[in-house]
Image (tube, rainbow, N blue to C red; front, side, top):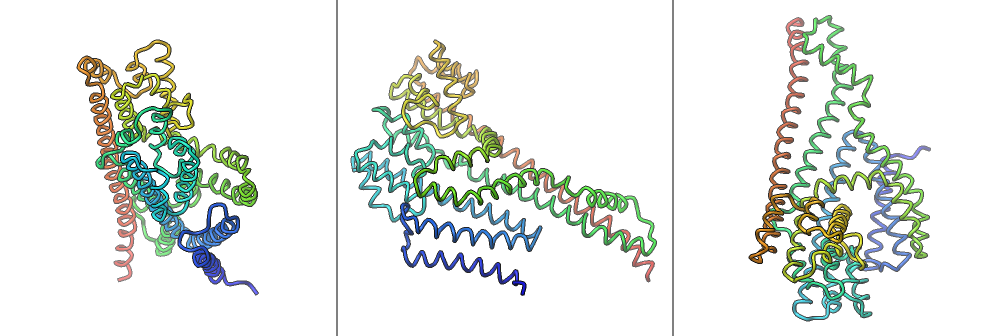
Length: 449
């Protein structure tokens, strides 16, 4: 007796949900502790059941299921990241308020643990334990990067060892509402979804619909107009070379599918290493497997470099106000930092190392930052003019705000242009299909009448 695939999918999903509900009833709202191996195993098993049901549904619905899975996957990821970012910002705000008012940081975080869930709560709890054991807040921030937003690492790097005041650095690294990266990323995601939908719809029409119309037209012996013949020729090309228009998508998803399959096979090994606190090897292997995607992420970080440059210049403005030597500030933010904390972006760290080497070699710090592509020639002249009047911090903040505003305007212009182009292309594609298939249908109806 062959099992019903629909019942199998429903059973997998129901089993995963049942495990999650049982964990909620047994462990409570906060869930199992991070050190509980039984809770970790149950969580992994429930996730595997839920993912298997998700993949099965996507496979049943093919193209529609794939589009739905991609859209829901990106939406859920964006929702989870927004939730994680909100909790990290809340924890970071608690730390800075505690420092400003002289309250014990571990007590403030411990009293607000109920506001946090998942990995954020575990990281904050680890931070509280470190602070209770007389660890420095900068060390706790560096050892628990998931507890706070990424810019907290840069602030901790400049505050370590009796450096700059942490609350002042936190205010300097905060982005203005009009310069937030979220709306731009959502706009880019929307463009990607439109392009993906256009490619999938065009491929489906060319492979499944146009050949059926072609059979009808030839059965009635209709003379096809040139525009219809172009659609038929394009359909034949799609049928013979269907993989070419989908090549970019397949080139990205195929290695990802292979890597995820390998990860699924290695997951039990990784679980064993995790339970025995020897998971360094496992994550090293995963990092090697995902190297092409690490390279892609590094390349994408170049696109969002203006936001990192804004934070870096604002942090350097605070160092100038607090009279920290520029060579020391640049070294703390780069890879050559003596402490465990540094700037969270690898591209910025490499450029700060380049600027640090230039400063150590005897160069001017403004020209060193220009060689690291943090400043332009005009910015260097502005800083030199502002230095005699003691307005260097103001000049750095002004440069950071102007550069980021220009980058936001440029990205928005590209987004609007690409959106209009995609809409016109998609509309032209639909018009091409409709006109090419409608003209022979009119002739066919006239002939039948």
